[in-house]
Length: 164
Image (cartoon, rainbow, N blue to C red; front, side, top):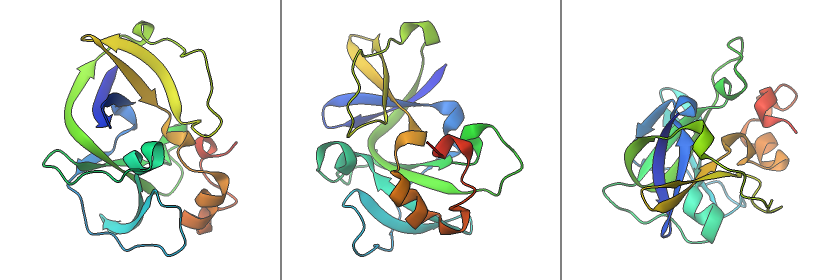
């Protein structure tokens, strides 16, 4: 599988490239008052209002640093469940050090052996080039409450991948 890699703090994480619609430079976001700290806000992506989640803030309570390699990874959440009959809805993930993709065999990934209730988005782990690479489960990044807030028109019909 092809994996888009990035860093949260000193650790390497990844997303399956097939779940990524596009990678774009950071954008000015409209802040959402009273939203969780890890929600950067909203921006216009190809004519669609798109929420952005700061992955560093989500994982470590430290905002992403503004670096040349800081980018927003765009996910089409309707694509995550493989259905093409749904309207596009995008989610942006702000992350640092987005500089590479790697080919990693699916068989190289292992279950980490534990589940962290406050971080259900953490997935399988592989040892790549002498370091640990952990996949994120993008469909687990938003809580049910946050999904209802960010995608209110789809509240009853969110893509299956985003429903529990």
